[in-house]
Image 1 (cartoon, helix red, strand yellow):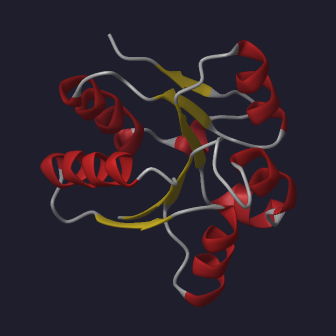
Image 2: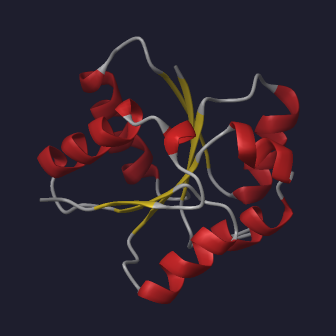
Length: 137
């Protein structure tokens, strides 16, 4: 499995990668700092199996990324919103723009590991027009 995280927070990238490595060290995880770099990654590298997308970033935020990404790509690659927000209008807007899941960043590494394990093991092709909401327990 190959993941891409688009997040401007270097600490969040680091902890995300560490938790993914703990879940399954065969998962490859690449990171970029904003939506523009996300598009550059998609142009130059093999498409990931999942994209984890922060909403609040400089240059191009997550909503702008969702507005301009190729809809055919969104059908093949689940986009998981990975953000500090749990604001219901943000969740609804992300769903309308094609995100398959919404994960509010948990407060602990243990909760992060549980949430990420749920996401990487989930069959997103089973979703129709629904969105998976992942919350820390």
